[in-house]
Length: 112
Picture 1 (cartoon, helix red, strand yellow):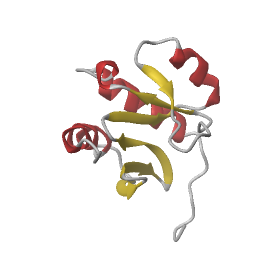
Picture 2 (cartoon, helix red, strand yellow; picture 1 turned 180 degrees about the vertical axis):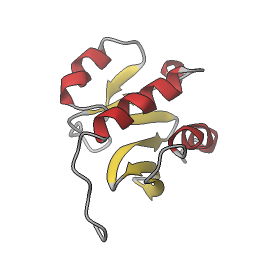
Picture 3 (cartoon, rainbow, N blue to C red; picture 1 turned 30 degrees about the vertical axis):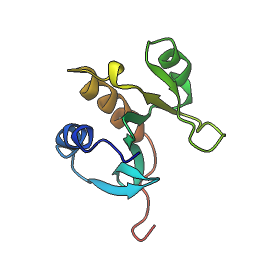
Picture 4 (cartoon, rainbow, N blue to C red; picture 1 turned 90 degrees about the vertical axis):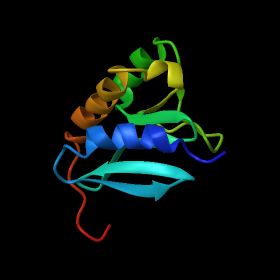
């Protein structure tokens, strides 16, 4: 199943407002990077966001949120949000949470 391009367009309209943020094709979908650090993206019909391990357990308490696991090994600090969980303003809220977390990480050096 290809990734949801409509979701990508909606998400990119949010992340493109932040300086030093770019889009890159990855894992059969698309990923958004801030200063070289992955902050989120689109995998099939799901929004994936990097919110950090501290916020991950709380996020799992919300409906339509599950581990980001496409290989059999869940990614630490990441969650996958199903379509019902990113309707309306929720999409921007998830991406803003991911952006806030990723801004705490060291910037990646160019060429990485």
